[in-house]
Image (cartoon, rainbow, N blue to C red; front, side, top):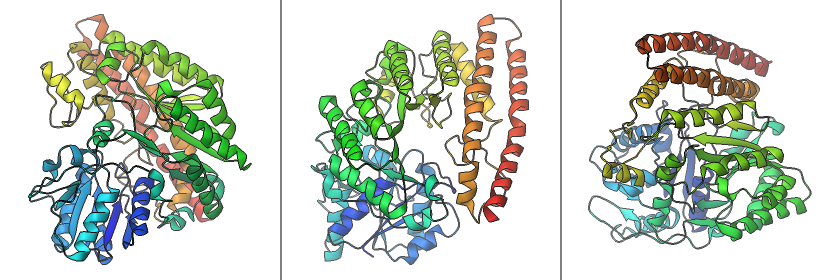
Length: 520
């Protein structure tokens, strides 16, 4: 095998069923160039046997994309793999590796080179040179300890990627009943915005060219229906950073996708993500007609100073009208926030709490599957990190920046204490990290499907009921200025612990029931 593409789940979740379509398109592109490319999905890189399984495929080159979420398990895996298979050229890519390559090229990482920027054409040239026995010096987009090559231009036409590789999809979907199956697609790359905390704009700017490119509407829809035909899938999620794209041209492309779906006269449902300012009635009415069920939007904050810091290009007073538009159209909407930032005030905290309360009362609006009280993370490669440094605020090694308002800083610390009582990643399949739980090794996908509605409800109850109520009460305590603030906060923490502790047992019981049902 010339090259092995290793994909992993975004949150080191051994139960995740991520398709990672972005890497599947790269695999397909490599194969179209006559390259023997393998694709393997390992949801948790630390699981036993992963190194052996990858090594057994005998690749000449291995590629793994690293994000900030996967950095730790990815680096551990690559170091282990390189020790076991020193003859294999190991390459890594992704946003942090592109923007700070030298952080990943140390002697102990196991990484031989970094694929900086868009991976597809760079990997093609690298593999072809390896096959000829040539060196990798001068390969545009490839960085190593010994060479600093120029960036490679972005692909001009994303349609050249073809349809994604289907490796492992049949096995992944087999245990799931067709009505419950979900397909994952990418219809575009990049984002035209310039949010200061996000690495996507800088990643695509690295290579020059347009920050956002879309596949042709007919190509996108043809792939949807090919997946429907082959795998009996009628529900889809587009994993685009921004499905709509810039300006009227982006709106028109989205409408063309909707019209092509409608033309085929077969019912499907799908979910997209886009910028809040791209939600326009005419376009979304057509998308709704074609099967759009939900949209994800990153609001980030209800406070204008925070929106300005984050570079959202959005007015705070425009947020509620757009959410009301989506709700009025019956389109489900999932919202994200960066709840705390270095300049947050208690007044701003209350505005963000008011949004969570608004979502809680809505029929169609909800919070995403992320923790709703996150702090801004200023990664060293981000524009916001430089902005804060210029203002005398430096991030620690985890990207956390001090909050100037001491009451808000204490509130953020209090929320951190609450998280200890729900030791979980909200974005993982199972909410709580369990030392022991129902045996899901056999029939685990059926168990997940049966328990999913309960788990979604549990997340919502914790994220939009229990947590906000506790945080609101903590705001009241901090604003009171009384001498017993710490004692009252400790009492609130105890009440929160009493509320969530039984939920771990409840989740395990639901899973045991689901597994039992799936085995009958």
